[in-house]
Length: 413
Image (cartoon, rainbow, N blue to C red; front, side):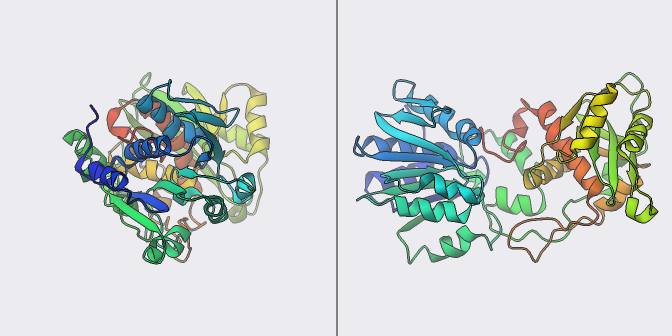
């Protein structure tokens, strides 16, 4: 027997009473149960719809759709009732044909032109281009067609808030809000941990479910808590280097030791070609990388993915394996903030430029979308690369870090 939270049961009653709208949005905090119940609702609704109609499920990418939704949907209804193929971009849900699409850029809307849909499902709607969503609504052009979508809150100037949520009374639009406290299935210690790990704008959005502007400093950096004078003991921990590449702009690199779940930026190299009025070559930067590593057993170097020539230079020398960094800005900032909050990120007192940038790195409060100001951000970028690419992997599997690691709700209940 399926157990529903009171909030989930309330939503299912709306479906049973035929009170769903044309557009049905489930929004709110992480781990609130909205993804799970949205897929239950989608499966029940599709099963009652005509078999000869077309259905669509979409997310920012097909990989995200599979990870967040398709595997969970198959677990919910069983392989007998739902089969899918990502290469073919389609599946069968209770015998109905379901197509899959990614909505990752402005060109995505061309993928769905000409379709006639009975229903559509959208995962993390705020990540979609507005043109794609507008086109998708125009494809829902048969009687009784419906859209079911999930999202976390975003900037209050986001197109979804301005042109749809604020106009809900004018539209055939149902907006159901969830918070983490609505998910009565979660263990108390998990809820307490995740509430502690989010800070600032991310706490307001992903815990309280509020649409708020990102403002002020990006990170809550506490000099007493986050700066250390200690260096890791020889032979202890795992070692990495992170790099944000620059020519005129600063080149920033940090040497990291991860031990007992805590990452320490042991030392750094920071060079501004513009300020020094002398540019350095890839070979000169590589020599500095060797000096930064010293005798540390560096497992690999994480580099700004756009720095193709420097990545090739590192590979050519053969000492360090190199990986292109994950470069999703907001999810990387969110993870970095969570690591700081949890005490899993320390900066040695000799890393002066990283410490300086932590005190200056601010949100651009004038933008319609969340973005940091592009100043005082070079050490911040290399630290974000390290957190997104290294710490994300090392923390995978620790229960309290579910859903924080990459900005998705992979295990949302």
